[in-house]
Image (cartoon, rainbow, N blue to C red; front, side, top):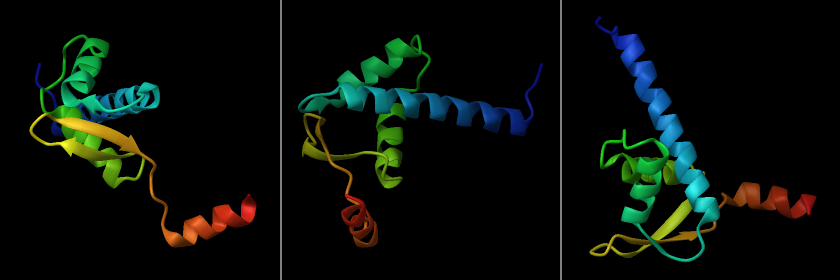
Length: 100
């Protein structure tokens, strides 16, 4: 049975969404710096090992671009990261200031 491009595209989108959800769960539980290997292992164990090795890191970057989370790289050679607050654009910051 062959899959149509649309079905394949939908399946990849579903997997990306699942990995993204797992990354957000990991980040909400995380206290202090973490190594990319810890994130990879968490995602792989949660998905029963059905993950391309570079997917968690790539999707982590996408989540930062979408401003769903933010991090700094403490050591590129050690793949060491630290979560930091998501920066809001100035106009949003003013909105939140008025509500508070």
